[in-house]
Length: 147
Image (cartoon, rainbow, N blue to C red; front, side):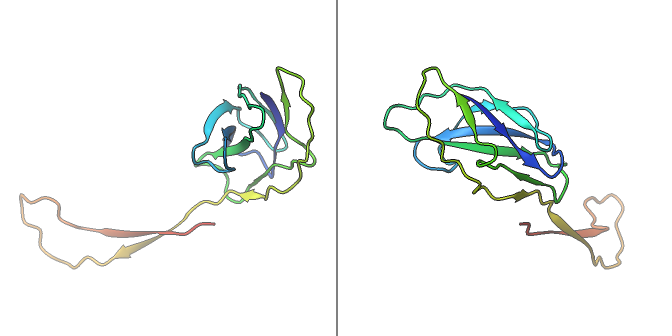
């Protein structure tokens, strides 16, 4: 299958779109990657090449995933709208397609983790000559939850 998809984002993000497939569930556990796409800017279209066989009577879930760079802008969003821009594939055969794609994918917001740095007390003391690993400063770093 060759897929084409339009992606909407609040601004360009530093990342990559990919999709994977799964035979049984709409989750990543057990999914197998079969295509990659280059980075996508705001409102951009991406095409993903790959080949996948779906046997008669089988159901497969095509999972579109975004790989967001660690330097991506905090607060920017990404969303795929299946109603306005449905996924389209090309096929080796000519199947009859019934598309029931809708706009049920929620907006995903890029969130940077929040860290709190605090100086911890180090009591005054003497440091002996020829010694190692003498604590001279302590920085406490707390990672706050995100999301």
